[in-house]
Image (cartoon, rainbow, N blue to C red; front, side, top):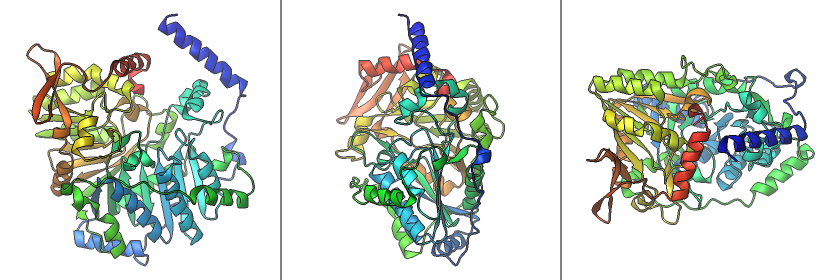
Length: 520
């Protein structure tokens, strides 16, 4: 059977399965009470409000920031914010797993709700299968609301089941909310690339991500809250009880949650390299009430919420990708992209050509095929890689084995890059949730902050000194692609995708052929 006919057969079977489970659809919103709500007004009378106000005054700026590249400190910062919050906590995320990291954070949110804090949790529904019961039961507590974005309405047992039972509804479910924001008392916020789950905090034994968050105070928090409210009150956010059948009475659900989360314990994280110790101070600073932030001019950029219905496919206007593209074209001497997935597309290639005509240095740090968790996306990147090299872009691809050894990840499995950062002329950078690929551009919604600060840029560039745990990709003397790295103190030159076995290479190519470029 040809590949094309096999795909057609699979689609036919899948649609039959979808039909066999009923023509399920979302309920009529007019029949459901979905209250509107907005962020509280921040107050210096709260502990976090006072901490934030003092930090802003000391920074002499309207917004201020602290980098959170260390996984342990990034998680502990979330817990500390939850512990100190007095009025509200807003969590928006693409992935929330029901593992130790996810469950303990939800348990901390429950504790906050019990002491009188309003909790709003907004989660994209694609990856909720392992946390569905926890989220449903948590919603039974007073002052807790949980909403799912673009929920699936048929088979909900796994991500695969959700997707296969919804192939006839792709025009809706192919659009996902990829935003990541955590806001405490509308005074302090965390944003960046991390979802909620063990692998985002170096606590999984079967694969981890090297990632980045940023803690912020000031005007940037208010703008992030505005973005959260827009999504929270949109037609795409559904109360979890309207999608997931409650398991018993509210009292029973609360007991279920307590029982499920009581035994959860976090695995220890490996100690960071000594040069990064200074980036782990945020939790202690929050406990002391003296938060040291770097002041900077900043602009929050967030995708229009109607992107979730497909209104922005083929139209960049007003999107995060458009803002980043404008900044790239305005660069004068350097653009440095750090992205786990990089598919520039024809528009991106033309922008890079403009940069090169203006003598702008182009640099890229991304995942190697061996490191990536998305081999199909890597195939999309490979389609442009040679052209990028011919443009003169300096490309480094992260080595999972070198990263594990060089970054002292100990027993933890090889890690993939998950940081989303773009630097412009070493005095301006974009940090947020957006990957530079077709999916982030066309189908997913994103949020981030454009920060103008030479000091913060220099700090983050020092963290991202990954050349020594990555391969430099070059065009060799014969014109073919080669990978140059260092092992055991000596330079090695490879003529094939390093550390990637035959099956992984074949899988990447096959999936790259099957999926449309802008889905990757």
